[in-house]
Length: 220
Image (cartoon, rainbow, N blue to C red):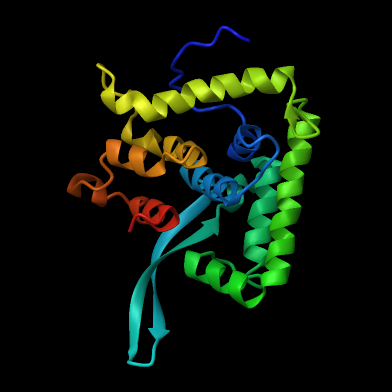
């Protein structure tokens, strides 16, 4: 065991997919997909834009508000290869569309389930392979290095869970809350952290990123 403090306040250095893979001992779920997308938004690699879509139902046609994501081309070369693979897969699932939205992604998964599942499984296998290449996992078990990294992640998870009840205020500037939310979703703490950060308050509602978090978190 390593000498890790009870709380660590800085997000993990590893990408969310690897952190989640360690958390689940080689398992990779949709949470890793969501957290990766959210961190890419926070880092500016995916740019959100509010848009409207016309939806036709039996009753009538009406417009709905959606958040579209577009890759920031100036950041593409610096992305981690796992992030590139996921972005390429998600946008490719939409038939080469230049924007990504949750309704579009849901439609792609519904209309082409086999292809979508295969693409997602391929990315998940890449995540596991990366964790093994880093010496963190072996045959679904954490190595010594993996256990040490996991202990640090657990200290960060405790911080996310408990910071609302700590005596001091959480040292999270508004411009930094995106990464905290991204990692919180890996630990099933997204709703709690969103509430603690006041994401439902009117003052935060003006944030251009709030719609993105609410859509991808299912908070809206």
